[in-house]
Image 1 (cartoon, rainbow, N blue to C red):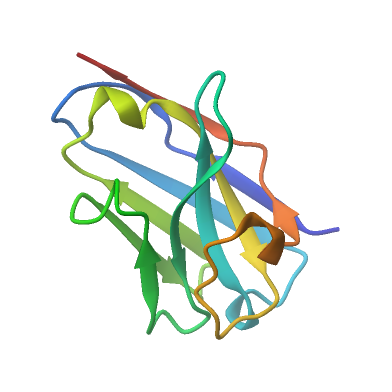
Image 2: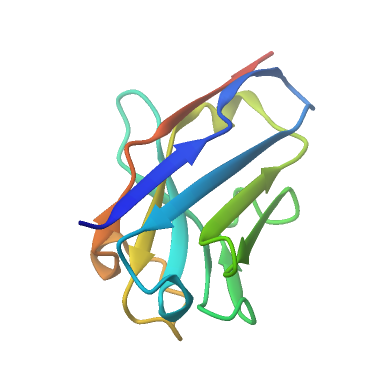
Length: 125
């Protein structure tokens, strides 16, 4: 019933930028915190960024802080991840996720109840 659909992934050179979008349906979007996670080949899924239901609080992994920006548009039921100054180590499948604890900028995957299908981001050196 809950559907999260990522888009915007692709191939980019190191130092370039990409913007990801995640369109949500089947939930009261404005009451959910949203997060981005990523998984590189052979590695565990890791936290990237999260934003609370009103957008007032954001949290980022140290590896992306200062380079990535998470935002949301509750009128469009969409969360975004703007990725600047990309590095080869950013290469991964990126997933968006929804948490019913809308006030909490959770960093742990267990706090999220719905997940998108993922979109591939590849950064070449």
